[in-house]
Image 1 (cartoon, rainbow, N blue to C red):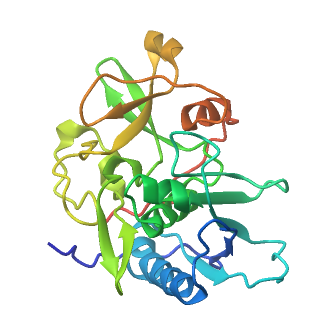
Image 2 (image 1 turned 180 degrees about the horizontal axis):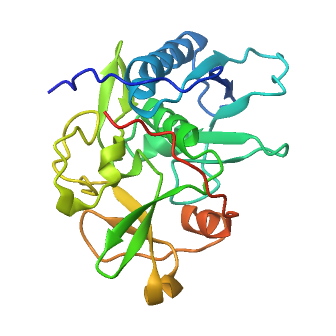
Length: 254
């Protein structure tokens, strides 16, 4: 079922500049195919993402030999992941600007279209560029912090834009306490029925408050017990090491 068009206010100011960089060598992506994917991602941001989350971006495909824009965030396509469990992740450049990475060969070996990985990292980078934002959800006498990873809970769900597979993503009300039973749309494809629900193949990153906080950041899949993996470079490790930066969310309630 196609998701209904949502209305909302765009964030004030200029769109974020995103430079798409193709560094694949083992199996080079034809320029025509890459241009088609970038156009689909631009449409996804403008048509589907910005009206919900209030964040706009302009993507530009960097040509061979073209200088990197000094103020642009980077979205890079590479061959093989340097982290065994990651098809993609977002980090920071040497200049401290957000950097998203998608690994084409690794994604294909996992039967995941690389365009979905690129879409996934783009949207999550736009929401939480420095990997230090989280939503507080009251639970029992304390509460939990959920990392603003908007594609992870629906990681295995995708849809097509002009023939290109792109990632599903959750809406702001996904981060509400489940007992509220929100009637608002919770993800773009309308597959989620209650806040904090995780789709098969997806997961969420959370941290308990109170005495349980000593357990640190953990990940929870649709099935199974929460996992802790704080190896150097993992998402949990990077979130645990991120400097706290209290900020107001840019989310727009529909």
